[in-house]
Length: 219
Ligand code: AMP
Image (tube, rainbow, N blue to C red):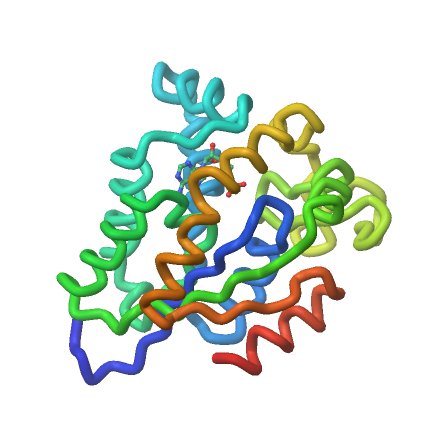
């Protein structure tokens, strides 16, 4: 990886429902760098069935994190693909202190520019409200909201036309567990990146285009 190459390595940090995936997709289209969503990659592995899929389902549907080693392997492989030469948008990774350290190390090893971290801040009640009524496209991973951002045709993805689903972890019980995991294991990364002086906080409670504009204004 040439150091002279202009790269954007962005990490969107935030709780489930903060809008990381939605913003990452839009940033990816604008900046022409791929979104690396570990959640999407794990759901893809899970959809292939087998023993690993069963383990993943049980962890993900109970709102627990998947072991670091597995997630890091997926990210390492994804980063080695040529489309990541100009950088990547990390969505949902890192989620633990160890993952953050491994990512820092990977970026150094691969001579990549350091991460810019955008923390998308949303109050807990609003996160829950968004997640319970979220609809997801299982084909292109776009998210909708039954009230705030309904699809043009009920239950059809505006972009690819696939039938929208409710993710198996978007139920109130699992949402609570996912939020607990976020506050216990991921939120401490705010401090980690603040110490590195690489963290920018933005108000994620606004409408999607306004949040997008806030992110762009700090890049
Ligand atoms: P997400 O699509 O980002 O909401 O992730 C859905 C689920 O996938 C999480 O609740 C975790 O079980 C798992 N997951 C996604 N990313 C990670 C990660 N970086 N580390 C561990 N587990 C993850």
